[in-house]
Amino acid sequence: MTAVPHVRRTPERLSAFSDGVFAVLITVLVLDLRPPELPTFRALLSLWPTWLSYAVSYLFIAIVWSNHHHLMRYATEATPRLLWFNFAHLFSVSLLPFSTAWMAVSELAPQPVAFYAAVFFLVNATYMALIWELFERDPVMDVPPKERRIMRFRSIATLCIFAAAAIVALKYPRVGLGMCCCCLIVYLKPEAPGVEK
View 1 (spheres, one colour):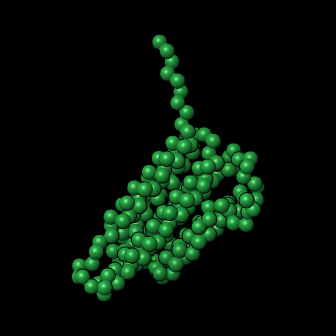
View 2 (cartoon, rainbow, N blue to C red):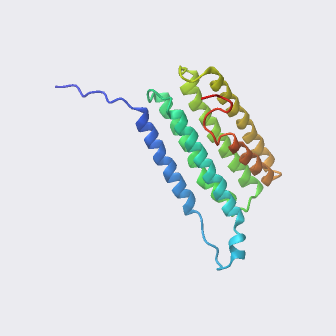
View 3 (cartoon, one colour):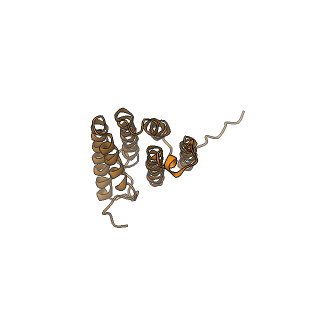
């Protein structure tokens, strides 16, 4: 009886699977968009909470995918810990269509916006777990210590802001949403800011 060769779980497969999940999430997100009941621009404009929620969530998914793709370049092996951290990250992102729909239907009511900010917090927390697994537990030689420090600081700072946004949103939902949007700016470029390439 011949032994079955061990198939190594490659990071490329993990990245491809994750890309598929992100594509499905964007599709689910757009399926929640509904046209206004009346055929007027006024009716279309009255749906501004829906359009704003969709736009922020679409941008957020694009930023998360871009940063995730950047991180996965440093994966040399799909370890069990990396697989589970990645699944946790994808799970947290999968909550975005639901939280977006709830926030839009409620017209930016406090509790839905607070929940939306809490989802951002969870996504960032699981992203930090990926950073820890790829850079801290087994440091990658081609990632300079300065870049690792900046990425760690950026993640912790935005995690704190997302937590604060969830609390602020309970009283001032638009301010809480604005805080979440401001955090997205620092992740537009996946590479750590201030690091020479």
